[in-house]
Length: 183
Image: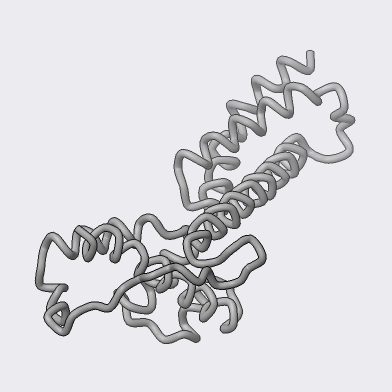
């Protein structure tokens, strides 16, 4: 009987759940996956559904936990990417590595943005940044937004913004040194 209810609920609530997941994640693929995971979890726990709430409320509760788990997992990945990005510049104790030589760029490099190959390399380096750093750099330098606007848009504190910008610039400089100036 409860399995039949689940089939009815899938038909009845999939679209609402999907819209909510899409609103929360801004990704069609992630939203689809989260809705699927919601129904899988509901199928596993359908015997625990006592009817104290509506089926829709129960499913949305499961979905909200799935969204939270998604962002927790994503956050851990972002921290790992940030640590990997800085590993070139800092040792395990967080101290500057003494032997890192980024090099000095020539005055001839002032018009590099006119060079298509350089712009491609720069775009590659920006795409290699952790996602939050990428957003900060793109909003500040490509969209020319002010710090206050960026903080509001990304939901971060000003000190966090400037720390991410600083780390992103270090990573970009290292990436450009390796992929453009050294070759």
